[in-house]
Length: 168
Image 1 (spheres, rainbow, N blue to C red):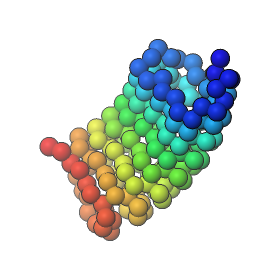
Image 2: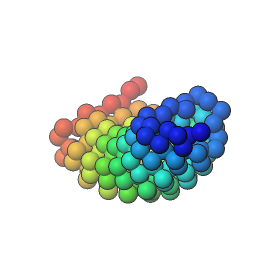
Image 3: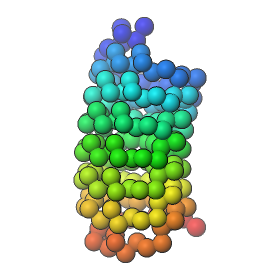
Image 4: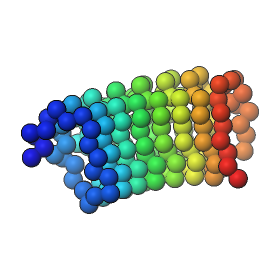
């Protein structure tokens, strides 16, 4: 049924019982996709969506994000409240401007140094302790660090346009 919608640009399947997203491969023109709070675990089918700019996977059971390396046009990615721990695949997303990692088990954010266009980063509620990798992100404007293990933010002093949010 989705093959007839090949020109579709925006699709939200949020809060549905969707598990298998294989049918989405036919939507080659899709720019915005929300799968938040679905039963989706396997996102391999997303590799066919090379035009995707915005992707919301928040609240899913997704753990392996290797498939995202094919989404070179992606600008906004929400992985909050997922099972993601390893974000190495994100190094391929050079156009990424906004990244939500809140509520994940992510500890190592070294991969983010490759994201030179990143402007907004949500790390609240993660296992992150060391944020020195962020010093390479000269475009970073907004950083959320509440409920993290971060103790030292001096490495960020070179980022003069950065606003850091740490809630008590």
